[in-house]
Image (cartoon, rainbow, N blue to C red; front, side, top):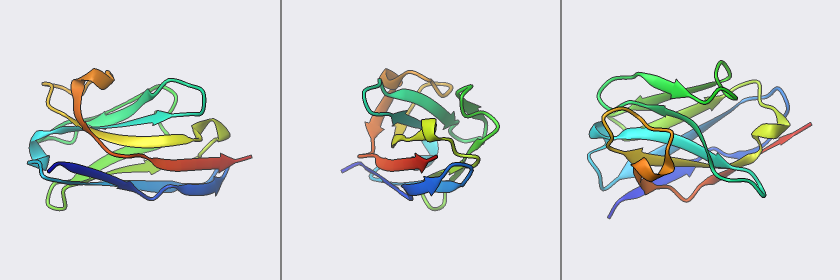
Length: 124
């Protein structure tokens, strides 16, 4: 049974930092691209960033580039999302996802497995 479990969400003031983790089980973690998405209240779920399988090439949405950093530890089957300089507009439920396209995709349909999400709230 495949499971992706996010953790690390919470309430933080604007300008603060949080680190989200996503622990995977039931899959050969290293062969999957890992993506992070978020969904704010009343909005569509959107791509945040991704990290490529096998290598550590990362991709980011323009809204988070320079503030967020994705990394992975294949030995721990875990992907991380370090979020710095948080803004109120970063408030959302954050999801991790696993996909097997050649390069990481910003499209949700290219991801096979999804976590349940973790809430991040940034106060002003």
